[in-house]
Length: 128
Image (cartoon, rainbow, N blue to C red; front, side, top):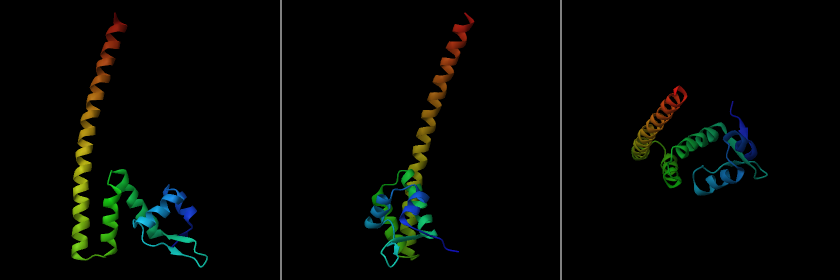
C-alpha cells in the first residue's frame, strides 16, 4: 500500500519545515510533487525515502549543489552515465566522510588523554 502525506505530514515525517520541502522542490532536489485537484502537494512513500536519503547526505556534509547534481543524474534513470556519475560522487563523498571521521577520532583520543590526566591529578591531590 502506498501512503500519501500532505506537506504538513511530510514535514513531520522528515523533520523538515514546509518551507524547506517547497524549497527542495523548487531547486530540483525533489521531483515535481504530485498535486491534488486543489493543488495541494501529495508526498508518497518513495518521496519520503528519497528525502530521508537527502538528509543523510546533508548530515554527512554533502553540499546542496552536489545533492542537486545527484538528483539530476537520478532523474536520468539508470543509464551507464548516470549510474557512473552517482557512484563517483558517492565514492568521493564517502572518502571525505572517512577522512573527517579519522580526524574526529584523533581529536577524541586527545580529549580522552586529557581527561585521564585530570583524573590522575585528582587522584594524587585526594591522596595527599
